[in-house]
Length: 245
Length: 181
Image (cartoon, each protein chain N blue to C red):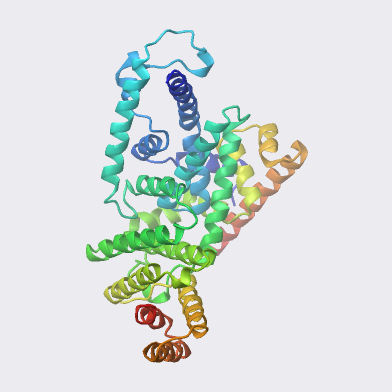
C-alpha cells in the first residue's frame, strides 16, 4: 500500500519522460523553418517583439537568415522523403504532406488521397521487404488511416463514379494491397475502403442501367451485375474501361 | 516591395516568440500526450501537429493570452481525434499476431513491472479529467488557480477533482499490488 506522499513522489518521477533532443530540434525546424543560422551568425539576431526595434539591424540579416533557413528546411525535407513509419524523420515527412494537403481543392482530394495511400502502401511494402517487424504495426496503422481518407474523399465528390482514371487507381491500390497481404500472409482490414468499392460498383451499375448501350456493353453490364451479386465489387470496377470506352 | 521587408521582420519576430514558447512547452506537451497514448511515435506525431496548429494560429493572432493553455487544448483535441479515428479503423486482424512480438523484451518487461511503469499505466487508465489534473498539478507544477483555469472549473471544484483523482490512482495501484501478491 503506497502512502499519498510516496505516490506524489512517484508521480513527480514521471517528469523523466522527455522527447528525444534530436527530434525536438528537427520538429522545431520543420514547423518554424528555424535554423541554427540565427545562432551561428550572431549579427543575424533579430529584435524580438518585446524589444520593439530598439536595436539597429541590417535588412540583409533577415534575407540571409531566410536563405539559410530555406536551404536547411529543404535539406531536411529531402532526407525525410525515404523515411518509413518508425523512422526518426518520418514525422517531418508527415508534416510536409499535411502542409501540402492544405492547398488541395475538394475536387483534387480523391486523387491526392489515393496518392497518399499508395505512398503508405509503398512504405509498408518496404518495411515488409526489409524485415523491420517492429515498424510494421505503425505502418499498417498509417495505411489504414490513409485508406480511410480515400474512402472519405470518394464519398464527398459527386460524379466520381464516372471518373475512370480515379477508379483505375483505386483498383491498382487494392491489387498492390493484395500482393502485400500475400507477402505478409495476413489480411489488412480496410472496412471503409471496402464499402467504397461497393458504393462505387452499385453507382456504376445503376448509372449505366439508365443509358442506352450497345449489345457488347449490355453484355459487360450484365457481367457487372452478376459480379455485384457475388459481392466481387472490385471486379465490377475493373470492367469499367470496357463499358466506358 | 516597400512592404516586403516589414512583413519579413514581423514574421521573424513572431517566429522568434513562438520559438520561445516551443522551447518552454515542448517537454510538457510531449509528456502530456505520451502519458495518454503510450507510444513514442504517436506522441511525436501528435506533438508535432499540436505545435504546427499552434504556430498557424499564433501567426494570425500573436496576442493569444495563455499560449501554454492554448497548446494543451489543441493537444487534448488531437488525442481525442486520434482515439476516435483508432476506434473507427480496426487495427489489424488477429492473424497478424505472429508478426508483432506479443512478448515484450526483458527491458520493456522491466519498465512495465517497475513501480514507475505501473504508475504510468494506471494513470493512463484514469478518466481524462483525473489524468489532466494530476499531470498539470504534480508533473507541470501548475498551482491550483492555473489548473482551475485550464479545466474551466472553480478552484474548489479543481481541489476536489485532484483529491478524487489521487484517490482513484492510489486505489487502482493498491488493487494491482494485491493481485500481484
